[in-house]
Image (cartoon, rainbow, N blue to C red; front, side, top):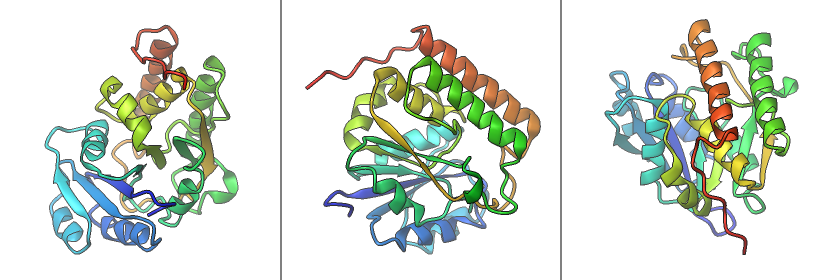
Length: 243
């Protein structure tokens, strides 16, 4: 529990067999996480066996796509505070508490991996990836006059149950840009959010996206196209009613 609220952590998994058990144990070791929901998105053989060694609850999602896996996890999580992360070894479990520390004041709390002193040696955050994430994030911040945004691709975040219920019917992306789509809904609706620097470690194994230059570029272009669509009003996002 965090301040009397139930906390769920959602882990999508595809190629994280060698790191997922440690990732689950790290977040549970914080003492504030009530449940871990692992969404098996056609994961490599042996993943389910690793999850079974932990208290985490595994859900099978045969429809491929990072966004689809996260959406399924959100649909099945029971917490008041919904934390999304990655079980690939890049994030530090204790940073969940850092994210939750701001959840009392903000319905949406984002991590950022672009703070240089928190990028660990060997992490996949070289010059091009770091500044590419920064530039796309700044474009969104500028066009929507948002709060400071420095990382368009950080998956570690917390969304309140209330905000999730407001946004869930507007989600449409099933692939890797889903996290940024969620952020654009928040920006467009003028919802208060905050970004928090988090540790970023070397990944266990190779990423299916950022481990390949071409896929990384295509994802960046997809994110820019999402910004254009939201800015031109081509995406329906009803505004939050004022209290």
